[in-house]
Image (cartoon, rainbow, N blue to C red):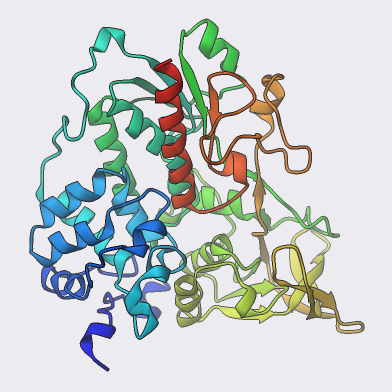
Length: 468
């Protein structure tokens, strides 16, 4: 095959070695590899790839700069529209967005847009000092700056903050936890997104003037109305995410050794159990079952291996083709030896006399008619029960929004079915004047890049509305 149609893949840790450490799996491109991969870009006059990017990164332009060897300019070009490129380059589902629309993909491999974005951001972090005035609208006078409060420091909140501070706003982020980053720090493991990178991206925003107040629970420490009336904020953007875990409501789910994926990953990632932090207990488990088929399930199952499990298993009620996880994450999990039990569903968690988990009773499934999502619905095969032995179970079947902000903001419209804030997804406007919302608190659990797109859209609305 012509080299034009074959992408340069990143070199990775050996699966057997990486399954027992928390180091990042891909090593990244060398300068030469990045230039070669970037040189594959056709520089389309009407680049469809840009249409597939929720934050409108000018993809052919930054890739062209990499091809020319001007890595600093490439990083700067990305940051014109994307405040978190090192993160996006690692965790965004490019294969379903920008890369899916790449013309080269019709005959071969699309350009590795995500890998190149990661390369440019990493190169800048390692070689260029931060310019605190980079991209900032300095014509705004500080005393006259409008004040914006951002609730939550995940991808939506950070993106909105970055857009506003660059346009002269006085921006404060209120974070409930003791560390900023939201799902980027508590949900995504070190081997997929090193936390030092998240800290550097946040440090960049702080250098632009964004203030971050931690251990501040909006709805408890202060309400949204308090932020307006007492703190005199002009606008509030709610980006508190979807951190309330879902369970299966089956027998035995309260047994010792059953975790929500949210708790399991938070203990490992944010609370540092992965580095043997004695103040953060976590049941490591000899045989661990993770229930679910999304990226969070893959993260949980792969974390269990790295915490020392002899066997890590995934139980998912559909087939691999229906798995919502990224193909790369499924592939990495399979390479590392994780055992997949597909077309299976737990019906009971079995516990011993001491209340601790000893196994999971499952039934086999077959796929029936398609449901509202377009995926075929799983149907139980009668008489197919079987048991898998285990001592830890992680439930990774989704999250919903925490009800605290809706409950303490009575004039904010909430969807009855999902408990999400009702907001226009194109501009973030809610039923309450000068309150905006975006990311998982509006859509339910989704991707980092979609949350960033929502943050960017809300920032635009805030600027328009406060300009009168």
